[in-house]
Image (tube, rainbow over all chains, first blue to last red; front, side, top):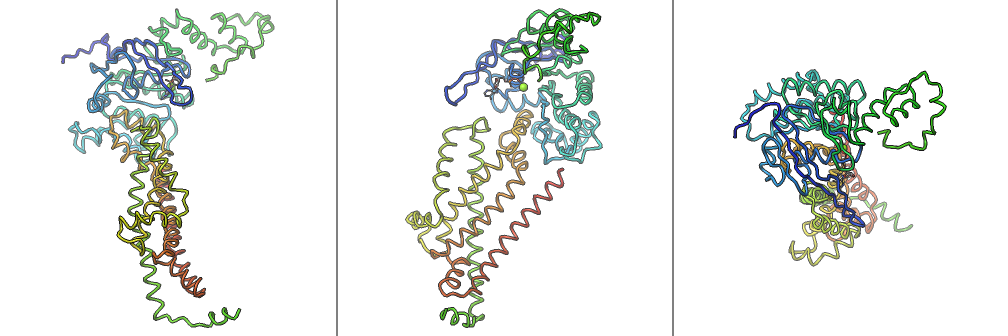
Amino acid sequence: MTKQTNETENIITLKDVNKTFHSRDKKGKENQVLKDINLEIKQGEIFGIIGKSGAGKSTLVRLINALETADTGEIVVDGIRMDGISRTDLKKARKDIGMVFQNFNLFNFKTVYDNVKYPLTIDKESQLSADEIDTRVNGLLDFVKIKSKAKNYPLQLSGGQKQRVGIARALATNPNIILADEATSALDPETTLQVLRLLRKVNRDQGKTIVLITHTMSIVRLICDRVAIMENGKVHEVGDVDEIFENPQSDVAINFVRTFKSLEATSLEEADHILKTGAKHSKDNPMTGMLYDDPEEEFDESDLL
Amino acid sequence: MNNYIIDASRAINWDTTLPKIYEATFQTLQMVFTTLLVGGILGLVFGIILWGTRKGNLIENFVVYKILSLTIDIIRPIPFIIFITAIQPLTIGIMGTSIGTTAVIFPMTIFATVATARLVEQSLIQTDPGIIEAGLSMGASRKRILFQLILPEAICPLILGYAFLLIAIFDMSAMAGTVGGGGLGNFAMVWGYQKFNPTLMWICVGIILVFVELTQIFAQYLTKRIIHKRS
Ligand SMILES: Nc1ncnc2c1ncn2[C@@H]1O[C@H](COP(=O)(O)OP(=O)(O)O)[C@@H](O)[C@H]1O
Ligand SMILES: [Mg+2]
């Protein structure tokens, strides 16, 4: 298998992927969570997936490391078909895909050091000696700047520190791909920036492809090269972040971009105006505030998320 | 009234009584620890199966879960003293006899297994599903996830659960004593109730209390230490 690593090679491909959840309870309701998903993610990029809560983002990303299985379609990750993969091959494939979680999912009974070490200890095929493992773990702790907490337990750490451990742990087996599912959603804005900086360092310095799930357009703007915009299980638009911000095509994309811009508004009235028209109105106009409709009418709870 | 005066003035012959107390204590410990060992291990296995076969879990299996769960729900509410009698034929079939310390261990073990299974299930349910997710995502096998991630994560509720179990087994052993199982429960009943000797009865109660308290203190100490270390 010869593999070139030029910028344009697709490292993750999803083709015609569909996924329906069947709930066993009561009426046997069916919930088609992913509809005809086609995606190509390139080697070395930071690829964003944005959508509101329930859009299907987590399900989509969990298909990539087969935590979830698709009903139909093809999923190829780093040259390996993930759909219908055998259990043994899957364990191997997963070592090439690190995952970072919203709630960190650290092992609370293990020290920071042992958390990062764990993926290496279960890797039967790696020929690393105990010394090499130690060097690697320490190197990772250095990389995420958490070495001073090596002997601490996760419950003794702040959210940002926990996520740095989560990232170090995801990098332990030196995977090609990092999946980050709302990795900063539980963090305050300052810590969010810290973690985003770290993720970009992972991308730039180590050349890892990152698939980053978020429900916030500002994060896409800050860090992603390209983005897929999802709603109701469908990808409505895919493209360069800059292009989408400049010229969004789909209604969903337009709405996300407007929401992003509306957050720069200095009043709720102005924000609402941006959401409706896409343009900032002049603050000099004294009438806009008075003409403004009752906000309760169109208030959508999901806007708060 | 008359009886009481006669009984209370009856001197205890310690030379013959002490060996009986020792024997009863030994029988109790034999019943309790055999039951704890066998029931504790079987219960752990069934508890893990219960937890694992739940919806969305590592070895999700609706049928297995329902069958196990239902069996437990049927056995658990039966009063132990009735249960012993009810399964006597089975006890004879398996233990060869239905009386004595060894025989009574059989129904005790079944009850302990059933109780432990639920205790273990409850302890494991409390663990964060994110741990399984993290384990799977790094390529850990289900066996590793269970033994290296989930069980250690649930260690505190498990310790407290087993302490609770041990105390419940002491309780059962006292009841078992009344149907020929011997032990301190039997001793207390015979000497304290039938022959009305409060001193001897309270000695038995005291010995059981000491065991129960020691168990409780030890479990609390262990879990406190673990929690303190991690947080
Ligand atoms: N294991 C599951 N069983 C049943 N329904 C699920 C399951 N996981 C997710 N869903 C449903 O699928 C939809 C999409 O969920 P998810 O992929 O988590 O969305 P997002 O991450 O974008 O918020 C939701 O309606 C959710 O309730
Ligand atoms: Mg999600």
